[in-house]
Image (cartoon, rainbow, N blue to C red; front, top):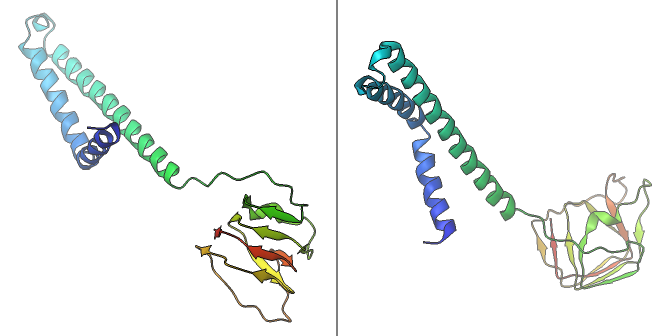
Length: 180
């Protein structure tokens, strides 16, 4: 059985048991350890207080062990989830270049620090544009063979002011795909 399959199986069973069993198992472990301490001749001379102390120590050790295993399983699952949603690696580009060919580009690299300034005369050929970002096309933006994935479009009246966008003016897009 491969390692991922073992962890998935352990996670499934651990998840089921974690609903109510930690408390039940802690009580059983505490009582069981106390009963074993009572049955041993080694602790008989110390009386009932030794049985109680051994039971409480057994329950405490079990609780810490359970917590460590549960925390490890949660961290493992969290790392798997984060790995599944990992953002694709981005190529380092110079946003001042006019032409971009076969790059994976973070579209936010084109954000202008000045308000109401547009990005002009850019050409993207066989690129992957990665967001999230709000893009506004001005003038003669040319979009050819663009595959939009997880993107939303909004129509805006011509005479309305749009804020907080990356405005592309007279730009050409022949991109492989755009990913939000």
